[in-house]
Image (cartoon, rainbow, N blue to C red; front, side, top):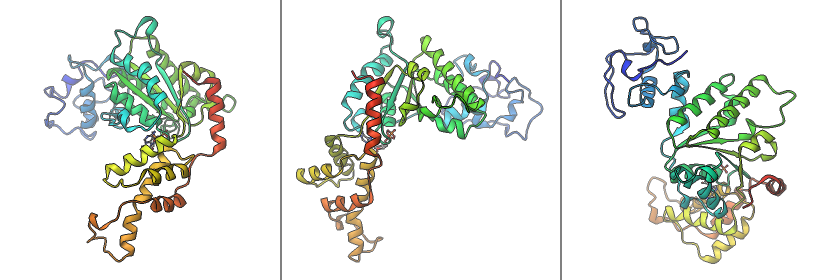
Amino acid sequence: NSVGRGYGARYGGFPRRGIRSNFVPPIRSNGANTGHMTSRVSGKGDDALEDSTKRCLEMLCGPDGELPEKLRNLEPRLIEHVSNEIMDRDPNVRWDDIAGLEHAKKCVTEMVIWPLLRPDIFKGCRSPGRGLLLFGPPGTGKTMIGKAIAGEAKATFFYISASSLTSKWIGEGEKLVRALFGVASCRQPAVIFVDEIDSLLSQRKSEGEHESSRRLKTQFLIEMEGFDSGNEQILLIGATNRPQELDEAARRRLTKRLYIPLPSSEARAWIIRNLLEKDGLFMLSKEDTDTICKLTEGYSGSDMKNLVKDASMGPLREALRQGMEITKLRKEDMRPVTLQDFENALQEVRPSVSMNELGTYEDWNKQFGSLS
Ligand code: ADP
């Protein structure tokens, strides 16, 4: 079950081709065409692999045309899944897209971005932790921060939801985790973002813990241990809305733990302005914006986005009510978005986080959070 050496050079004698080449292999290799070419890939002939899988493996080959050691014992289809579905080549979020969270941005810059940009300086006493936990209510920008880190540090971003490992990848989660860390180590510097990490590293299973989820958790911790002790340029970011479910082993590995709270009033104002301005729809006065901010106490960033979306439908709905036809409607025919549109939208879009939940986060932050 291992990918042999000289992989890139071995595609039925195909010449090695560049990533962007349009080269079409002379033999269709879709599994139906097996037999004459045997190889050391999963015990199957090379022909048994899809062209897309071959291309993907080829991109991971070193300059010598060989697959890196770490990937040789992994299943090609899992490597392909990681490369295509989990790896995000262009996370496309910058710090400036994230409202508020100044404290988190400052900590993350120092702890993560500088070390990724200057590994030569950040060693010895300055060597950074390799695990970061972002915790707090849903929809507050945790995923955005993960993407922005990758963007700012020019790192490859890998996103996986831990619950998909336990649900969608039943029985294969361990292998996928190995493939994930394997590909990440070939794409350094890398940021691996594990959403809902509590479902992977939770403490509550011990008794009824399923054998497979226990193995998955062990595998995950082993992988983390592996890059923690080495010189790898890999950062693991776990995100959770349920930090209290993480066990001690998880906390130990996620050395920096940052609380990502609900947006402040200023941050909410910023989100409103930023989203509307992008579409040239921002005409609200300072007073109106302040009023909306007062009315949206307790709204998350994601709730704010939904609110703005709903409010921006106001002028359109009104124009149609007045008898205009959607096909003939011009942008100029619509009035700007007003406070009244927001007041209407507030009836539809309610806050998704309850105040009691906030207390839990604050308590956990006091006990385990990195306050500085
Ligand atoms: P989380 O990972 O904390 O659940 P996300 O980062 O996925 O939340 O945020 C969901 C959406 O909500 C984002 O795509 C963005 O539109 C909006 N959002 C949340 N927090 C912020 C923020 N601080 N600044 C700007 N937009 C935000």
